[in-house]
Image (spheres, rainbow, N blue to C red):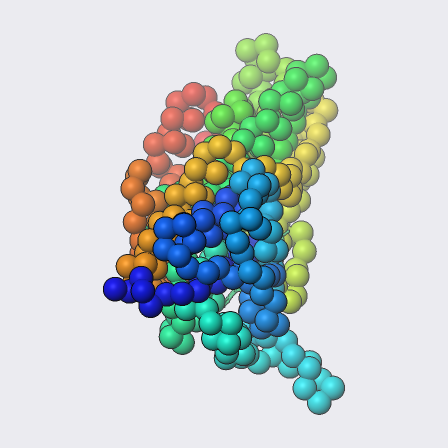
Length: 367
Ligand SMILES: Nc1ncnc2c1ncn2[C@@H]1O[C@H](COP(=O)(O)OP(=O)(O)OP(=O)(O)O)[C@@H](O)[C@H]1O
Ligand SMILES: O=P(O)(O)OC[C@H]1O[C@](O)(CO)[C@@H](O)[C@@H]1O
Ligand SMILES: [Mg+2]
């Protein structure tokens, strides 16, 4: 019944891009057209395009060949919050709620349901549009894997693969020069990428935002390796890691971003401390946006396809105001109110994966 009421859907991607966005756009578009006969409109540049009316018709032809492509054909933005948007009034820049303009633009385009793909920020706006009566279905994305309500977000597996390959490469050069190599990875306040890549890449020490460290403990782990004849070490640092009693390392503040703090620099700090304490030459590598660019892994292509198909089915059954989720191996959904109301999903310092790593002799700098 509900299905018949939907003729046209819109889709936008918001926040930092991540591998898997194009497969999601493809899955939503194909399922909407092939299974339900709906028309699909892409909204470009996240919420900015909703405000400017930057729309593009998506067809089977126009989304062909994007499954393996990184980035998003619809572009993205981590600014442009329409509920607090900078506009010029009487020659002055002022912040205003212009969300009604966005709602009116999608109404004029005949869009019945909005598919919104993003992280916590994008989905906060998605919830706010749902509160205004827009029919919304949300799809979670972030390499950080920190969104509550869902087990895994797409983009995460690719980021872990990239970080793991970086660790493999750092291993050989570390060994040749008897050096300590420090790799700083992304993740904001969550250590998922650091923990997973650290285990997959055979790191000797993993420093996570969730487990504050003492640099002397890190140095001791490295010295113990030396005593066993291993005169090189690999340390993975999540960008949000901090010393016991210390603060996160902020690289810059981006004033017009709703989430203005950009982390970075902790890897260099840890490397210089370890050089002094251990005496080995030490180098730091900041992996940065390499983790976000490029082709999605096969598992991310599958996950984003599942999310996209499920999101369309959710809309077809009239379940608006929800985000599709992965629970175990099952696709499900949770209300945007719940998702946004919850705290970020962080690594459990006493969880099975951290304990397993510790059993393998990996140091976390806490003991
Ligand atoms: N508190 C908020 N309320 C309403 N909308 C927001 C809020 N924070 C962010 N947004 C909107 O969401 C967009 C993206 O936000 P953000 O940069 O946090 O990315 P994200 O979707 O959380 O993804 P990620 O953090 O993984 O990059 C912003 O451009 C803005 O339009
Ligand atoms: O794209 P920007 O503004 O450099 O943001 C980088 C941040 O976004 C993320 O890539 C995704 O949230 C984080 O891992 C990182 O801290
Ligand atoms: Mg965010």
